[in-house]
Length: 225
Image (cartoon, rainbow, N blue to C red):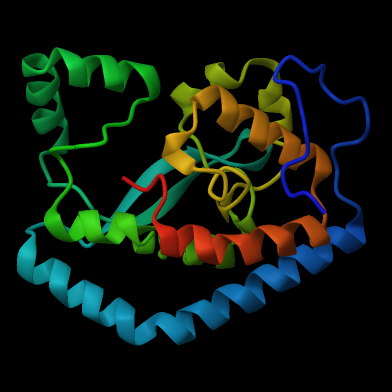
């Protein structure tokens, strides 16, 4: 079974109902809670080590919360381990002003392969995807799911065009089709297509397939920067 259903980016919005069946919604929520609780228990010693290492190597708060767009367009604070310096905005502005190539890269996808804002321990957390572990608490709060589109900021909504309807029909997730398909190595256009495909094809079986493929994707570190 393919976990990346083919979908032309220009495909019209589906006319079928975007609402999950009640049973599917119940099972998904139950799985989310069980998996999230299990991850917290298993990773607790590692989380403590990360907290101590961050406090010793980088001044500032351990957690970073940024407003993201969730299901039905509702925004929520999306949690991460802080992987950047505290004055990240000033560092980015100065870097882009001095590096035309970096400015062009940033304008394309708002990403930088060699981001000067990222701390040494933050780079390790990103490579291993451990910076996103605090989103487990977003899952427990019901704002996110284990599997779903990556949560976007409000400024990104325009890039989804008419497909924003599909994005907002499901909860954003910690992992999803984009994460197992190259992440930052893919274009934003491809990301929108993957998010739309997931929203229109989601099922328990698809979620399980994505979870299984997430493990090797995380271990490889492909597209994480």
